[in-house]
Image 1: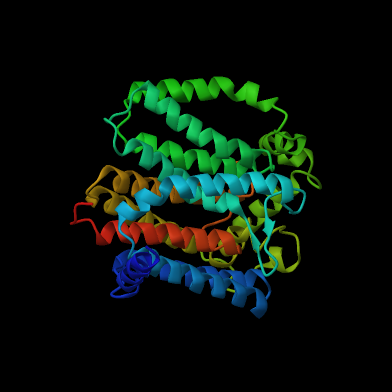
Image 2: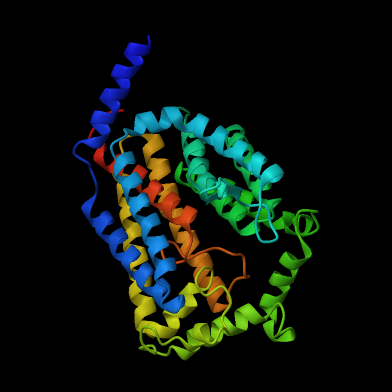
Length: 373
């Protein structure tokens, strides 16, 4: 029995490590975005080679995982999905007991590195929703919608209690996109959105919604009411974005970050640094690059040959859109500050590696689009 498992493992590794299959346009877009991210991080970190080098190492690890996972058939990913979802949810429970972070229990200290399990759930959540919907008749009825809703709620509530409301909403959105792409009737979508809107006053008073989170929403309406407190982030970010003008001040010339007016300028607000240095033209080009990557994801989803692959690829692509939209809205003062990084640009190891791992799944779906799983 052991010898048989060893033979199968050797065959799997041989299949994974030989002839990597990637979608060249998507890979080129990701590589370009990673280089833009490193250049922006170098400027935002005031020329810190150590910080940029650490991020570059994470990119290398992420691209290596991308190549590795691109060789795993979607059918294998589908078989692993329940275990991956259960494992990532269990890690969230462990975080609630042993986690550490700046004012929040979000990380696990593994000694040589810190790991944020909620980033992993951003992948396992759409995988689980796609896995559940795959063998069922579509579009889904209320029973299947309710089951997927429970699957979404379990990790989302655990993440919200850390507290990390921004990531909880992103995880919920990733699962919801799988439902949306399954062909759910528009009248059902309208009812669900209406019900979610009606629940906002109730959620507002739930115990895991902290006072500082409520203040962030209220500050969005009038940041000048507390310019040195809760409104500081939004005001300084808007100054950075506006001072960039049409063509920007130039690379390494962001005064807001260098004078330490802009908080979290290497993480959540790094897009404000980019906007100040490259202006409206640079922002439009970056948005176009994101649009290309998202569009390529949706194209891969349309070319997929089975329901699981189609829903997973589409959900990952649409989730990337939400990340970009939320961070851009937060930086420009259109949305509350929720701590959502700009994908592949903001500093963050777990986020970058997880994101590239998800794109590895897209590469796998693309590589096996002409095969019946």
